[in-house]
Amino acid sequence: MSVTRKELKQQAREAMRAARPAPFWIGVLMLVITLALTLLQQSLSGELAAYRVMLEGALHGQIVYAEPVPKGGAIGWALELAMKVMSAVMTVGFVIYTLRVWRREKASAGNLFDGFAVFFRALWIRVLPAVFLFLWSLVYAIPAMAGSMLIGWKALVIALPLIIPAIMAAYAYRLAPYIMLDRPDLGCLQCVLMSRELMRGHKGELFVLELSFLGWALLCVIVPVGGILLMAWLNVYMNVTCAGFYEAVGAERVRPEPSPGPEPPAW
Image 1 (cartoon, rainbow, N blue to C red):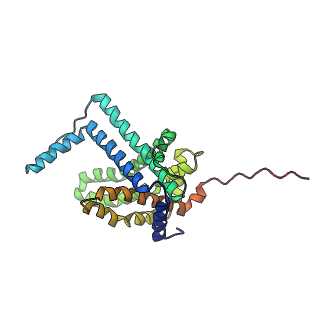
Image 2: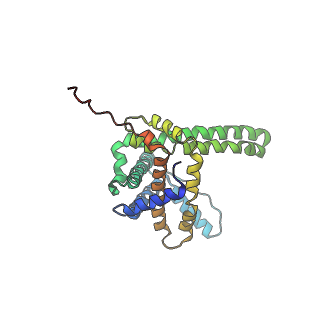
């Protein structure tokens, strides 16, 4: 990578200071929307009611397990799925916003909803990596389950290193949404594969970069007042830095070369 972690984070803060409206308020809006969608989804799935029953039991010193009961049958299931889809597309909109902030382009709250303008591509670019990660998880789960019948807990210890390829795969696909935005001419599968190529040799760098925000994340949990607001700011800060990471590791290789202009007439 051509820049250090410290330089990336410093440039991200400078880009955020230059952005108008202030990214903090966009982070608050994104947090509110995310929480609202999550609460609606958990309410429809019955998880919210189950959590309430278990919490009440814990307050009375009892260990209670409550099975989530979906509400509304097929309609409730469809609405729950719609909440998940909206959340996935909004995530792409947030990527659009943070990438524009990093590039010092005009960025606003409206960018959060820009993912709906490319709805199917935005949804597919979220689904494809999840499918690949599921397949990687099978690489870990199947040997563990098969081996556990033979050697018990030792199988889990043997299969544990197989988690590492799954984690590496997750980082390999992280740049796919950025590539999709810069290359609308490419299919989502091509964007995922290109992300894997760009991240070759850089997955550890992104892992350490994200790990460097751990102190801020712990502060969000520890601070009783303002922790949620700090989380909103941190979410923007981390994602703007990630946009800078994308620029550093190969955005120039992603963007198509400008087509040459017409040749001058021969006189």
